[in-house]
Length: 123
Image (tube, rainbow, N blue to C red; front, side, top):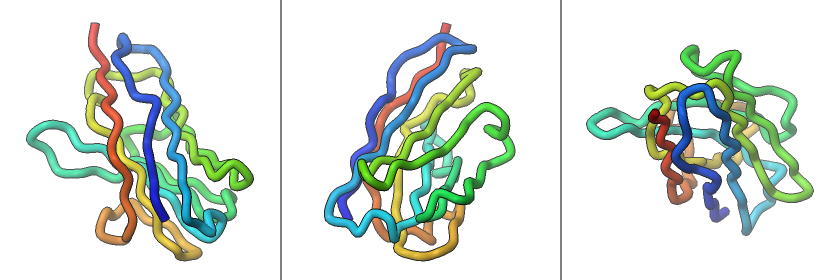
């Protein structure tokens, strides 16, 4: 499966962005999708993951209550709605896929990765 993340940009603190992860080469509805981010000089961090059915979403503690993951299997898209953005959310965001019924925030659980999209939160 091929993935492409989009929707990043430069926003002020407190703003919102919605990232999209598009997929091709599926079957998309058999893949768990994760969002990861990597800031300069830091390790890649798992942000959120959604199961292939969309029934369960998981989040790193630092984004709980602010970010929401969702998916539209018919459109082969996964979204990451990011609200109340903070400067510490600044990073390159990547989406990843793994054909499995579960979910994980560990990057080595995923086999397929897309190109990243830059999110910069700054005043």
